[in-house]
Length: 213
Image (cartoon, rainbow, N blue to C red; front, top):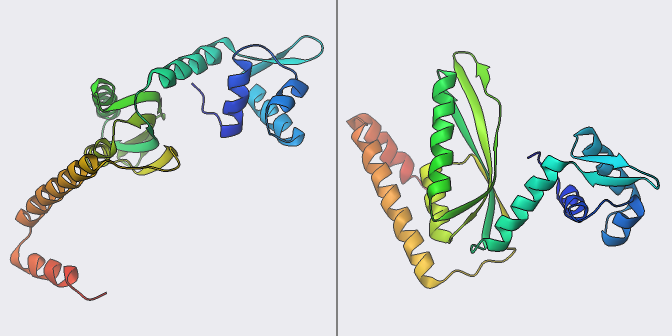
């Protein structure tokens, strides 16, 4: 599914039920006419919607309508409140390895009971010098704060945006579990890193670590 802006999402949800004129959309949305018309023109160019009839009405393209409906159905049955948009970057020396890594990550997330996948957008691979690179953009919800901590550590997103809710109240058990998970991950990482350092590197690391700010 093509990616909508927030205003275009509102337009798409209204058009999901029936075709509408600009006037119909303006009455139901708090979007100025100029912005509304610009969004509609862009959605037509992207082949997300089409114009038909007289007076002129806008209708969602069939494939987009199906995608919007599927996403709406997911949201209605989703038990999780924490919603995120995240980007995971990939690099590999061969394009087939890159695709395999992306397949593996998508499969693990879809099979996990800690997350609900709304959308998964895969960028086309780009060759840079001797490597291929691509990224996976995910719109997901997470079971709790602990699940977010695991997501950050095990999947290593390069960027994360919290979509909802605007305010989060954490249960003590969830916060405790998340902090323990984080502590264990940091300890394992530190042990692995320290094993690979020689004495001089360890001394330099210790000096930098405890240097006054």
